[in-house]
Image (cartoon, rainbow, N blue to C red; front, side, top):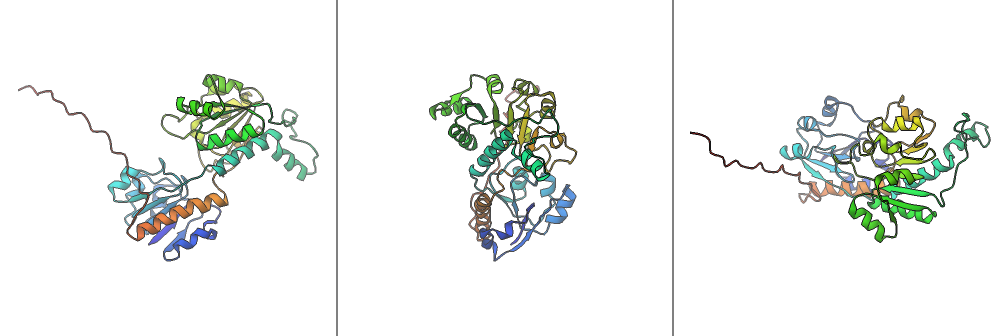
Length: 339
């Protein structure tokens, strides 16, 4: 099969141990993303199979219609809205889903919390410039870092990642406060954590608030400017999940108005964000380039599963195929037409 691996920004896939699984196939690795359906169509038209790195490329109906040779989309991790599953099914394109692990994103979340709380990046950057024990040249932001013990860690979303982050908070001696669905709050209580009495209470009480929700039509924009305004002036908001969970432009405005005082972000509305992005220029924002899952062990896990799905498909015994949800049937009217 002719296989394309898309958006390998760091050119690291060819160096993974699991890459040897594709030794009997013709593989092309693209290190730079292409913009626009036209560019992508020209690039991808020759290939039988595409291996996607999470949601870095969008396979829309318009694009899939211009890929005559495509037979398989192999997803690293879980497939999402970036693939038009219905359009793929209509064109006979199989979609195979991979596996994931919460460890790397949970650990990055905690690294961001520690780094932002102790202002590690600012101190380290200034030290290399010969500036001793200075967090910022702006007196407004040249403040002491702080420890986590005894402070309140709020977590919205108690899934696999949220549960790990909660355990880290407990290990650091923090009060852990959980908000989410009723079942999530009940599970958190069974696990020995405190469920917030309300969403407002979560935002108002948290010294550190970390978002761990899946993006869907119901969670998109769920964090409002009014929610952020409830946060303490010295609170830290952490988002390693999805930028779209926050109402557009709400975080920029909230940080500039001082509630919350700080943010640590690994995700953005547009990726990569424009260099002139407000969030990248704010001195009270610690930003990383969506590297929650970008880590050696995670890549070996994700790509091994994706490559095994390709091999299984090529051998005629496909595995882990997704079936698109069918639209609900429309009720049939029993009203008689007038004669």
